[in-house]
Image (cartoon, rainbow, N blue to C red; front, side, top):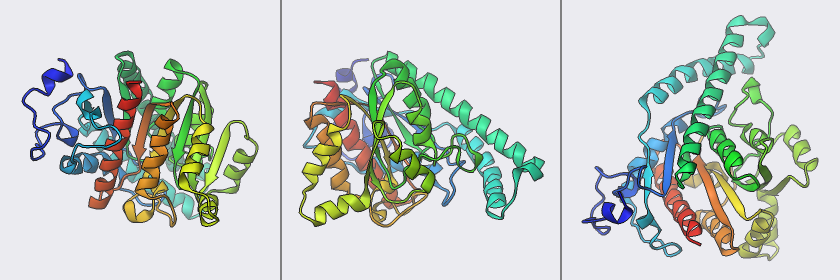
Length: 348
């Protein structure tokens, strides 16, 4: 089915029809240019749980969105669609989350793995499940890429997009990652989880085919991560939230900083957008909220700068959305704008 066929009889000005796909659009993953892959997973979260419900909340709140975007006004006509949320994955997440909560509590009380066979077995089970999840996503992402589509992962915790990053590294090596986040996520196997939410950029940056990583909004990190950043000047460039704020307090403007950030990226860009990179008022239910952060419009402007510099977004994820109404409202709007930018870039 062509996109024109899907739009036949569709009224973009009408009340959002919840029988349609995300944003009340009449597309399916089969005929959409951008496909959202929901991953309802928060097994390794080390603070507040609940982001496994993020994809569902984004979907539910998306039907209130008005479709005009001044930056990419007709992009939605090319098709955006979300896969159905897999109930088996939800069940598996809930089962493992109970075990991981017990395991994390064990660590917080000073427990040692070598003294506890049960906790050692739990860690092994979760690591195996996380790798299986990544492999499944990598296979699915490769399928969509072969079809000329752009996959976008919806989390869920920040560990979940690794399979998509690996798929892109195989298909389109040489891309850079733009990470918007409150945390560096450069820990190696945090708490023993090889695919921890706090280890996603460690795993991504060591993937062959990923050229570099540019981080924006970082405002809390550990000494291990500082060491990684300072010893990787050609691979990792970090724009700390405090430094960004200080530069603006001293007279620099956001557009100049965005230009500098995007200049550090190659022509093809993967965007990983952890909503805790925003002001926590915009993501109150996220897993690890922190004071500070970017505004909604700052994030949108930064992403638009990618296209304004003639570069292209080849894949993305939007993660750590909480289950609350404000969380869903903000994330669904970010997602719509991001998808529009992806489609606009593909048309160049």
